[in-house]
Length: 429
Image (cartoon, rainbow, N blue to C red):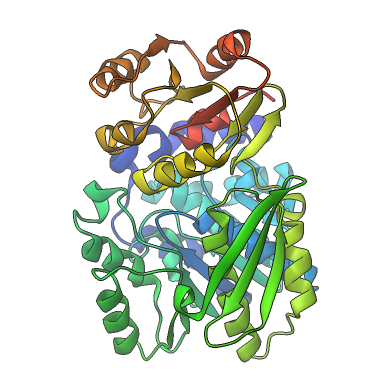
């Protein structure tokens, strides 16, 4: 099979969570372990950093990969889902996995696919591990797909485990309380492996403390070690001033990921780097500064407060749950603009009403949907939005909505596209 035929086979043959939701989830690691055993357990042949969390885990993964690459490590990066190209999920030093490897791997593993019928995610995890061995990486940053404890990536024993935060998302799969969700995320904590948690709540902190203690794993809460004292936007950068607890040494960091929510992610990244340094990893302060300043450029991360047009200002953001949307609305309030236009599409299994309740009544709305079965019908989304006094028209796809918003918008207006990773992935730019 050539590359296109291989993708057709994988998309058609294997259940995808992004398309069909929870029916695609395998609630144990049996298939992943079988796939890896078939491949001679590739995940044992390179070092890893494991990153989970409700929000921010993608940004933290890319920032860490950028820093490690800047420090001279040949660095693998596994993330999900992809926005436009399947190969975005698997990178080495910022370069996409080769089409040839995707095809050859699928041919190699095909007999086992037919036998055990794994999910799409299970196959991509095994593919990533095999590719990282093929490319002889020094370290791979591995982003958890969903949850942690039963996620396919959780076969690894990393150098360090990272959990960015806990929020309300995927409750149908992870539990209907923050402590239950935290327990699932805490499942990536391994025996004797340090764990960094970005921030906690009264409900989640005892969970992390208990699981870490059981595993004899040192626990550090990043938000208690440092704080973001000040920040500003300048020249498409987020400039953050941080201070360590109990110290007067303030530091300035420039991030090419300009969303203000990256200030929290920065604290998690800095503590993770500190813990690696404590383990003897040669990661210098200069590496950290350079890696953060060029993370987007080095790793190719998109969809995080990404400006794709000026006058009117058009911004993409993959925010899709209550915490993410809340932070996005904070940033919109701080962004100078006349009228606000929000292009919105969501998937059915999110807390749609809670998200809608966070959106401003004064914006012009354009309701649309991604072309996946999980997407909520744009007409139905419009009806549910009207309950919250959010009014607008329905559009067949996101690009039609953008075209209409640009026609209506003044030069000083802001057009925001959000609500779904998959919606952002369908934007033409």
